[in-house]
Amino acid sequence: MSRVYNFSAGPAVLPEEVLREAASEMMDYKGTGMSVMEMSHRSSAFQEIIDTAERDLRELMGIPDNYKVLFLQGGAHQQFAMIPMNLMKNRVADYIVTGQWAKRAWQEAGKFGQANKVASSEDKVFSYIPDCSDLPISPDADYVYICENNTIYGTKFRELPNTKGKDLVADVSSCFLSEPVDVSRYALLYGGVQKNIGPAGMVITVIREDLVTDNVLPGTPTMLTYKTHADAGSLYNTPNCYCIYICGKVFKWLKKMGGLTEMKKRNEEKAALLYDFLDHSRLFRGTVVPKDRSLMNVPFVTGDKDLDAKFVSEAAAAGFVNLKGHRSVGGMRASIYNAMPKQGVAELVDFMKKFEEDNI
Ligand SMILES: *Cc1c(COP(=O)(O)O)cnc(C)c1O
Image: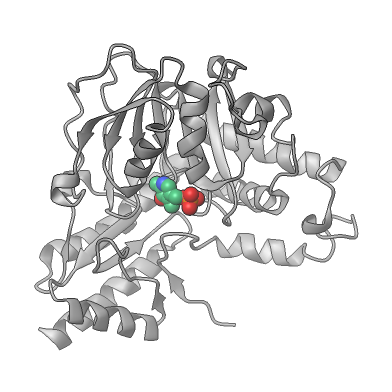
């Protein structure tokens, strides 16, 4: 067996320990004589899996009791629609557009009401986070929306925007569980788990209880109403059982590692290795304004397309895979999520140094 260092933006690297444990339980989960994949979602064994996963997530993030935790399907993209359908009571919402995902969410919300773009960083290829300390927030806005970590461009809100008292909604897909958060500052946060938590196929939404109501936009399907899933403990229909099981194992792994404070420390160390190298390199450079750099996604370029392609292909041959940047940006991107060991980043930096010497 040979494992590579996988820098994919998502689906992405998972902790090896979790994969091994899942493999060992594949044929017989805890004496049930079956895999979790083969198990009824109404069984007591599965109820225990989902309950434990929720309890561990609540503990890791310090989720207050007045918030619901929902395990949903449809990807982050479905949240782009569910959020306005459930929250846009006045049919007005303010969006901060800091990348392609925020832009999609803003465009989708426009189908349901007036979605105002109150700030954007599109003028400079989304390479920075705009000043959000005094935005023209609409007096009747139902919420203010951000994408907290911009996976494609490698920017992160280091400070949450001043919403002037309005509810904050955040897509945290690519920074979920990467550092401690104060959940009470958000009305709703959500993320596709395939970035920093588990396999593809599930979104976790953490939503303040008072927003979970039947008072949704007319015509909202039952399946797209948060209350449906909250009332049913995320078991209204068949959930992504296996994904919940793996995410539950990742939560246990994170707790064992020391929780989110420890993850933040590790993630800062990893990111610093790469950014310090980029800041001193004669060949490579980062593409993001330093103060807005993400700890999770690190885009960089050589400035020469052919050399970028050469780097990506030689890196892959050396066991550093999925370093090609998103098609909208080009260049390279190293996603260094929780499960990427520091050793992987250190070895990548060594490889980059060698490539620099050979190609300058
Ligand atoms: C990947 C990603 C999405 C899209 O996720 P899907 O699950 O494919 O819908 C949305 N937002 C962010 C921040 C992402 O990283």
